[in-house]
Image 1 (tube, rainbow, N blue to C red):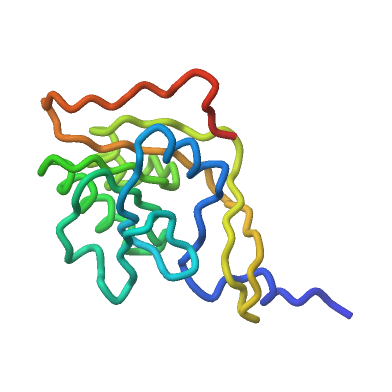
Image 2 (cartoon, helix red, strand yellow):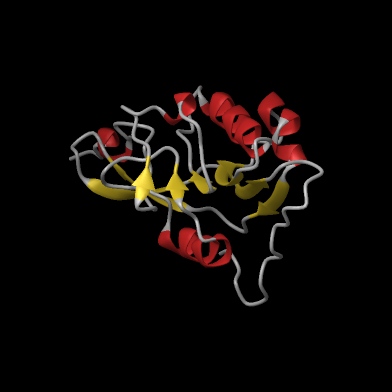
Amino acid sequence: MGIDNNAFKSKSEEYETPKEIFEPLQKEFNLQLDVCANEENHKCDIYFTERENGLEQDWKGVCFMNPPYGNKISKWVKKAFEESQKGVIVVCLLPARTDTRWWWDYCMQGEIRFIKGRLKFKGRNTKGELVNYPATFPSAIVVFKQLNSEVSIPPNPKGIGYP
């Protein structure tokens, strides 16, 4: 009996942010709006689903973004940066793809916190089962705020770290 390779493939690009990453960010920033989520994986009480399409919405307050990591990620990162220039703070969980244009055009203008090691995301496999998917890439937290503004990002409190 062989290994069912389909059991290790995801049905979608929707992965749940690990609790050990989100909770320190929530404590630090008091996140209010999850801009790309679904009924199962949202991290804030207020959230946009695929149907509401966060790319077409105005963002308010302090936002959290763990975007789909597919070919639309550059649009999400651009949107996060643009919304921050309107006065919104956006805390992003992103793959640390330092070889991409979107990383250099936008992420380099934010506060970057690299995450040690590889994350494990929850997602549904092709059988619809909720499983942990180890990331095949490094990750980072990128915080966008209005450039040259008086809004300050609190420093990462001592004792609150990321795995």
